[in-house]
Image (cartoon, rainbow, N blue to C red):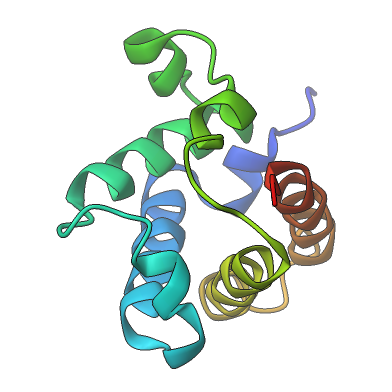
Length: 126
């Protein structure tokens, strides 16, 4: 029997989509996220789709992002945006809440959050 990928463990496409949608809903709703929301386009549809595609492959599911755009080069793609501690923390707060709400007590919540925290810190450029 082969081990499941995190993508499969958390419920696949539907769960990843729910996680991304909740994350961006929180970004639009939460006062503490105004700064990071302002770094995005007026409509979040494209951002939602790109994060969904990225997370799908990153979690071990279909490599949708790479198939469309090539290697993610996430740090390079984020360099034009001023990302400091406040932006990192706001992004993480939205992701933490989305993880907790969508995945509840799933055993992958903490490892995923730790990885997101490391990733968010790596994106800082200010």
